[in-house]
Image 1 (cartoon, rainbow, N blue to C red):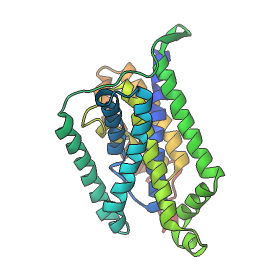
Image 2 (image 1 turned 30 degrees about the vertical axis):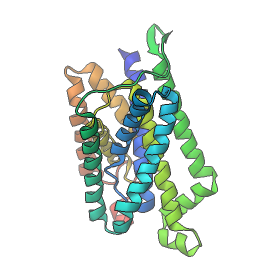
Image 3 (image 1 turned 180 degrees about the vertical axis):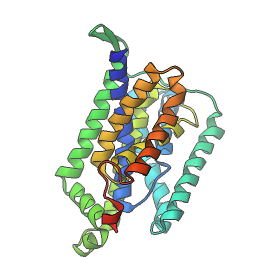
Image 4 (image 1 turned 120 degrees about the vertical axis):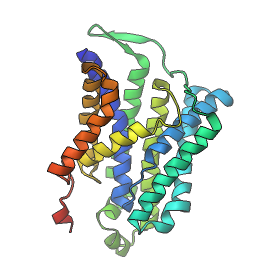
Length: 289
């Protein structure tokens, strides 16, 4: 059981890290609470299914094209629905909720409530310490880690990343220093949606695809960013693995654990809000003011 908890905890944590870091990134740069973030994650999974099942593409090609299509969809939705009201945070929150519901209903109308799936990119398994580990799980972990490392490199070692970090620190000062703030926000949004798309692409062969698959990751993502501190990328990364392993322990160790993982995540979020509202690595509200 311990080996299964470790493997599933790593997989869960890596998927949640891709989602939560992307969510924190766009919040930190543009102050957009993007509830539609996991709906775009779902869109990537559906695009893979479309490419594979309807267009006859290989799973790998369908995954790559789905990531590009999802990023394009996210950028278009931002330009049309979010950018005109970006300075009004309450309106943005409502708009992203509505956008997520629209995306859900589009896929529900197009595919019904059927459970769909795509074949794994890697078949077979290998044995490690007496535990059977699927090659697809290893591929998912490798792809997630590569995406996380690539994002870190892009943000910390490139001029684009420097501009994004400056904009996140202070948009007005960044603008005065000659940084094109709107361009940096679009770049951050592209990275954010790209991370959600990668998560959707690598999780598609591991789970069923349905119009409500975005809801549980949304719950986990919100719990993670609250635990780590809203806008803190480091906090999102660490909290993703904390809750990823917590979820694995709940599922494998508790009776009816699969039904309890959501409520437990929400309970952790509520406790953090009551005890330490700024999270593990966030800026305290007093300091922020």
